[in-house]
Length: 179
Image 1 (cartoon, rainbow, N blue to C red):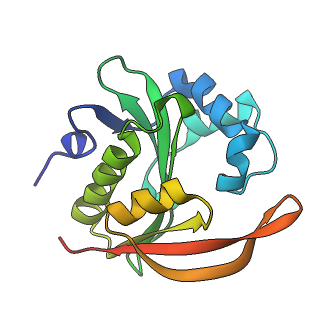
Image 2 (image 1 turned 90 degrees about the vertical axis):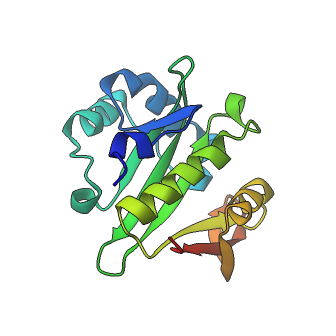
């Protein structure tokens, strides 16, 4: 069996649990209103709340039903984004996946690399049957990314997300385990 540490990395990036040193990075992501629509957040978090989460979380997907990992560049240890497995359901062997790459690192294949690593981890280590995601139908970059990684569009939710004065449709994508 592959070592867990090595399965969460490649030559360029490593996926790791949040550390206290990530407080400023997570604070900037969680409190950026540009990202709130993606994460369904509408209120900011305090540094204290994020610090408490980092310090007190068990970071065990079986306990919390979610797992947040920092995406870090190996070359300079710079945090470039986050990836989450959420709504983990061990009975039905599935989890949702969400990824956020900081703007300065977008369009540099980091999302593709990260998703590849988390797919491998989800299927080989967690032994999930499937992973899924919901994508705003106008988020063409994410649709292209997940489709390229083998996810299939399997549903369309009409007017699913409140987008200020309008509602937007959401597409459901899923990837079944073929390992």
